[in-house]
Image (cartoon, rainbow, N blue to C red; front, side, top):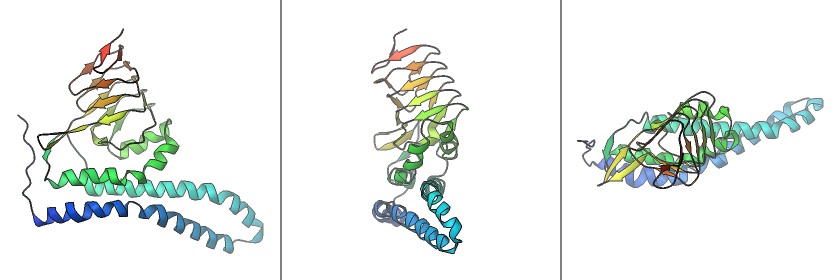
Length: 236
């Protein structure tokens, strides 16, 4: 039987849940103003220090550099928050008053920091290292497209040369006031698109999941089969 991590209610828990998490809504917006203003201000100062013959070249190069520097800094802030606040999540259960529950869901509020670079790099293998440093296991040659929502990245395992497009990951559940985290596995060479995958599901090597499907907890899709529907079923 599963046992949830117990945490006794404390005044510190109350402060965290009532103040810190709510303030996070406002804190999440701060980098969107501070980082670009700082970089633009620094660029203006640098432009004034350059010799006249280099100023035009600097004006041409500055906008894309500022753009990439901004989204990179936003992502680094999100990365630091993930590891400082949540750390490495593992398959486990937590009662709702456990501090981990609030810490984990804080990342959903801060996801807007990482979304720009995920949008820019989505559909390329350049996104894979970012997923890995956030805790996901992603194999070589895999393409992840249109990942616009945060999810429990420590629970994700994707094999090599897979294509994952517009997936809604539901890798945690609340059952009887208990948060449960379950890993999901996507096999080598699998193709999944516009579907929902629940924690505890497993998709075999080379399997294809057609749009509009839902793979529930505990379901295992066989290798090299095509699946569709909700509930999911093989069609070939």
